[in-house]
Length: 86
Image 1: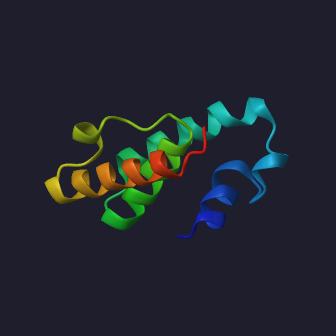
Image 2: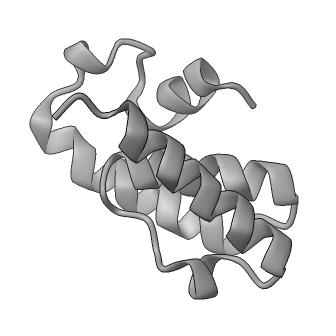
Image 3: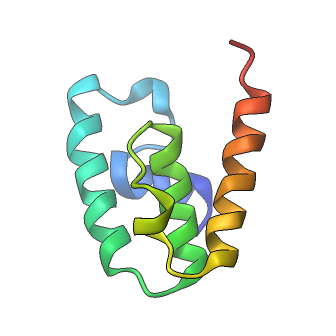
């Protein structure tokens, strides 16, 4: 599942500028449900990362059982923070 696929699945478009503000909360709720049900580590990480970008990701100890997955998420958070111009 690539980034555009995730955007289309949860927001109906790959263009975030076209997403109505009122559509964000329901999309994040669906992502949270899917995150809880997802068994594939890669897909689970991708969902968590998208939720993180929206400031809605669950804590690492809740989202990931595996310590390596938690470390990967920490690395992602560090990279995202370093790329934020603000």
